[in-house]
Amino acid sequence: EVQLQASGGGLVQAGGSLRLSCAASGFTFDDYTIGWFRQAPGKEREGVSAISSSDGSTYYADSMKGRFTISSDNAKNTVYLQMNSLKPEDTAVYYCAALYGSSWNLIEDLHDYWGQGTQVTVSS
Image (cartoon, rainbow, N blue to C red; front, side, top):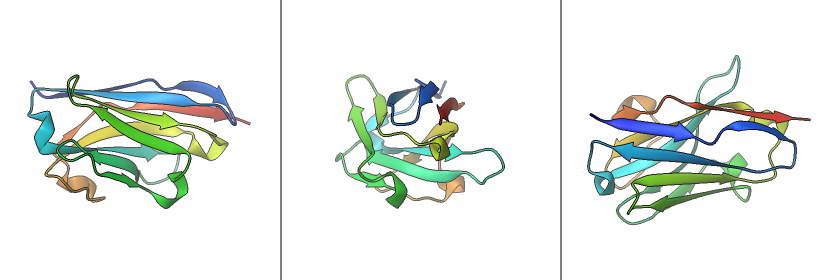
């Protein structure tokens, strides 16, 4: 059974940090690029960051560069998203998703598997 288990969300004050985890199982992790998307209330889901499990290439949305860091532990089939200097506008449900191949694509429909999402709330 394919699973993407997102965790690590919570409530944090502005300027604080959180680390999200996405644990994958049921598919060949090294063949996929794992990405994070988020959806804020009343807004469309947007791409945040991604990492290629095969070569470690990373991708970031412009607004996250310098604040978010994505990493991967292939031995644990887990991707992490370290989020620093959080802002109230980062409040959203964060989802991880798996895309077959070594490059990321922001088109959600191309992703093969999705996790259930984890809530991040940043208070001002």
